[in-house]
Length: 142
Image (tube, rainbow, N blue to C red):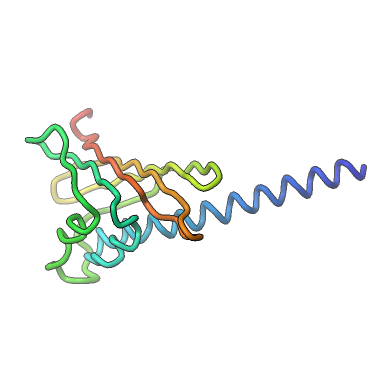
């Protein structure tokens, strides 16, 4: 019985640790998602490691590589706090020690395009940062 209690306590501790990490990762992802849906460039840059590559989709380019600073610049001259028609939701988060893989869906109400972003995150100095992002337009596949 004592072994069962020890194993159960260890399992609960690990589960709690995992839930705390998922919550912290969600906070980082929400900086990016809210920043880009409500025109807060400073939230976008806060979510990313400063040298993170963003691999974006663009119809006329096979690959479109953008820095976090350049990406945040897309929202710089828009009204802060105003919803811009970019609906987002986190689809999944997978954590392994100090790295994580996450997926989010972004729906553009104006164009009816749906994108999926895949994020690679790393825990740096106790804080989760997006270290890479790739996006694809899934509307083309419908």
